[in-house]
Length: 335
Ligand SMILES: [Fe+2]
Image (cartoon, rainbow, N blue to C red; front, side, top):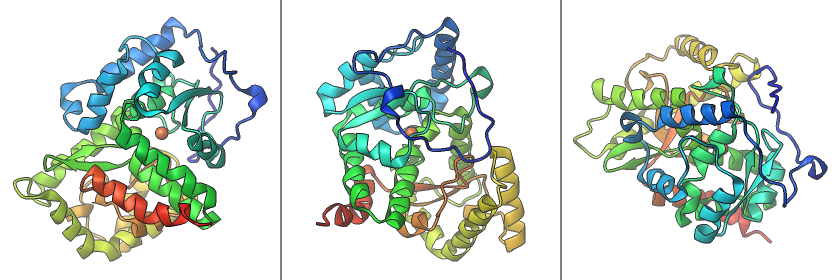
């Protein structure tokens, strides 16, 4: 398969699904090259390390076993369906689209179809790719999709999205982004990674784990005491500054200054200086952790694809469920 990789400019264009260009129901499988299987194997091995796995939530690790992926070979769609459909009723469909338009994506979600792209990152993107490739889709999301709680979470989005106003659709996309893509959850009184976007990118994963350690080292969080209330206290005490940072990041994004991870971090550092916010406490790392809060997440009007200056933490998966319900259910239940 020849890859025609467009140069990355900060935003990934959302593409419509064109049925005439899509894989047919009978023809979902791809003959991958030896090089593609080898890229898969190296990506798999890169994350499947004890020192990284210990920071990923339990459900993903359980799901990875249930999904029975071959570390050395890209799975067939049939393998994925065989391991997911009987457990949760969700199925998998291959698409030529790299980043699906939200309207089309949620139409598939309403039918319990999870799309996986046919694109695999190239060797120069092993640590990070802003574009969700098939390693992201399969390795990041699908271990979760073997489990009912995750299917239940994914089931919440489409019914709300279908009835949402344009503004609400934007909030729904952010809520999905900062939960299933970039969410964190507290388990056994430790921060753990839940979002598929972090799990499937070694750079994002290590950057996040560094922050877990940094919070302890700088005495922001005392891991011998319950950590979520401490995070919440920092959040409430610094909410005004956090919102100033979000507004500033949005403005930088509008100016096209958040187009790569490195550039993103440098401009955020500049922003701290400009706003007079000291790089200490909850603002002392390369990423800000804050509780999963609809108001704050909804304030991010533009998803920052290249660089996430903050990540949101749920107290538990049940709490994530409840927060999502609080926003999504009233919309889904409209006449
Ligand atoms: Fe994703």
